Length: 235
Length: 35
Image (cartoon, rainbow over all chains, first blue to last red; front, side, top):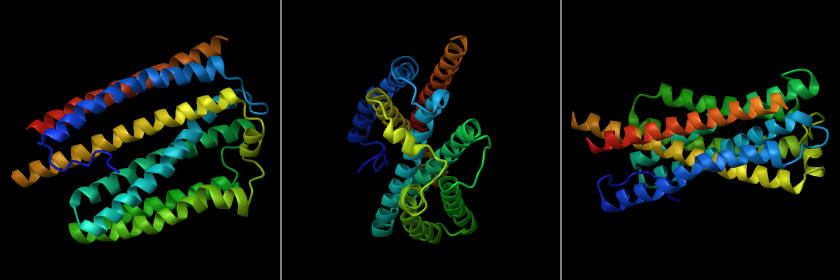
């Protein structure tokens, strides 16, 4: 898996890769505008959700990107522990950072949905409780990074933590709320039962678009930190 | 209907804004990498 961690920034392959990726980056805007048009003009509202259907097209892709980012962070944590390359540590922490951002956004959109559907922003529903625990887990990851000054030690400890934390992701995002304590309030069962094919397509397209945005953000931040680090070592 | 158009327009503007921001960051990072 190569999501843009620079190895030799000046090599021809890196330059070719940079220009090749520009095409999909340029396609992201029309793609997301199409998703928007599909959500509002093409796909019907989900029965029982009404206008809150539109929040779903943000909420689900945000939660998906959050989970994906945590798994990518764990992947780079493994590569760091195996090869001790600082680029892997940067990639792992940046992915966890973006994952936390998208988890916060998923929590906020979920709370807005909850207010419209259940009359309160927060109900300590199993899904809300488990996403809260996930936020705490990854909040602690950044506290750990901030607490250790030595670069190698910080990278090793946070890689080990990222590997432990990712085990909790499927439990907190899927297994606990769906199977252990099925949510009485969360509308997933309603959505799954009454999922129209058009709604499914728009949701899939939104997931693809959000994944593209995640990859772009990840690359940008990794390249920024790597370039800044290189400058620091030169100066 | 007016509300729907308004929400759609604001959403589209947010996407355009995010896209332009990412493009700007892209050119900044490239500049930094060249130095």
